[in-house]
Length: 126
Image 1: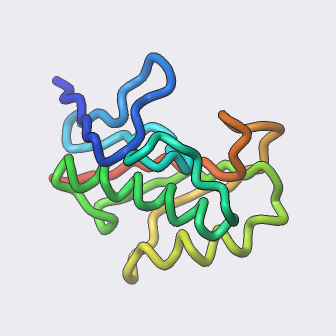
Image 2: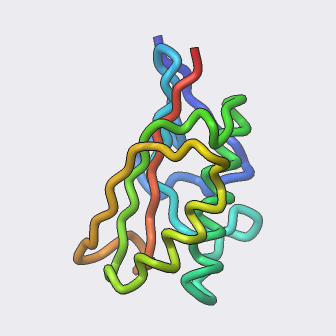
């Protein structure tokens, strides 16, 4: 059985998908971009602020589902340019305490709405 997770504290889906789904203790969160859920606008003022907005959106999904960053077991980071890796990596890492999830980071040709970073997560809670 699966449970759809929805919160107004994360961006509305921009396509036919759910913000997140829980199935058998796993939370699968759709990729998040730097859309500010308060006004629906992209937050692209800097790569730092863009990454923080993405992570705030992920945090909102986790909290709605009663999970947190310590439950995250896998992430995928998509970058528009690998030259952004160091700054995104530093900010991303600051959202975790001591246990980091498995992860891959890939550079892609393009991302939705012309953003620079998109991150998806999988979390688990028994």
